[in-house]
Image (cartoon, rainbow, N blue to C red; front, side):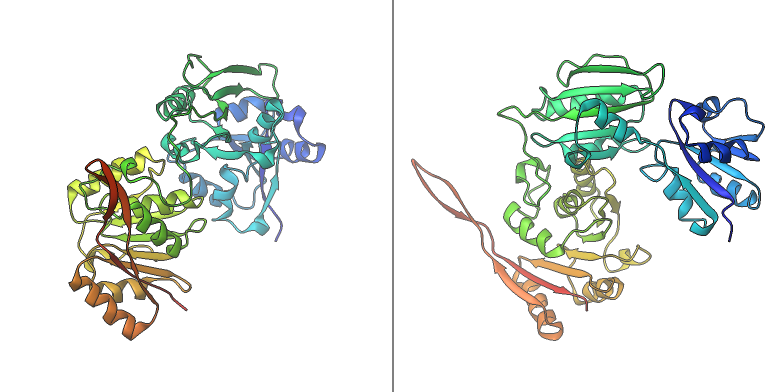
Length: 399
């Protein structure tokens, strides 16, 4: 099959910056699709012009109607790096598409900053919740961020300052590679620049001695979560998430999510990890939503319902955590939906729930352990061990 669709990355230097073969493709196009900025950069061509449709998903229908014509889609920089190319490629066969990459905003920004691409985190909050960058705020981290608009650097500056990273150095880079390229430098605490709406942000995170430490590995401090006392505690949570094995893009069902601590730690532990928290109490769903926003995983999905009925129709999970609503029926529904190589972990505190886990382990195998945690706390003028209720944990992998 001959490729009829060309997805072309373009920079601020417009047609002049394209390789000769790519420029010939654009000049020979019958139809060119892109944003108003892209059309301005390629002014003077005879092709029929189409602006990005609204909603954006309508683009796919428009492209399919144009099949057989010489069609060019213009995108900024590399069309397969946080851009439109991947979205189109999921709907149209790769044999029908030719990609023409250009230097990405990340590569240009790294060059301007003198940073090695292998030493930075590349993120996008363009058209997405800005809070998702919070999970990447760590001492000495270097971040390159595609922003949503002129206000985004100020929002990120506040996130940094609120967490004890006010000394972090920030640079906004706009119109890179063009005649109007401009740069703004400052610190998070003192950020006051007015910047162009189309920009890339570089952040070098610098932690104060009292900065909040939010590692990506599980085991965040309990006091970082809003909760009503019913929450998987730090030490047990670390073991629980480790056995759930977070992986890139994987989906977790967190049954009886409560304050959302397990689901949130799962999402923080792997890029693009997803989680659905099932929780019948509205007050706890509100706590989970607030915690997810504060800890940088605003895409946590929350479902109102009781199990096992609430599990019907959900996307098949890669892992399941049962922290509430434990029963043989809930296990059966979750296990049936779990993908091959999926992981299931269930925690129990009461004797009744513990009995259910012992019965399930006898019938289905897996690992059964008791997790007993004590913390040192003041006892009058001295210090003693304060034990938490022991947790019975059952875990197994679907083979």
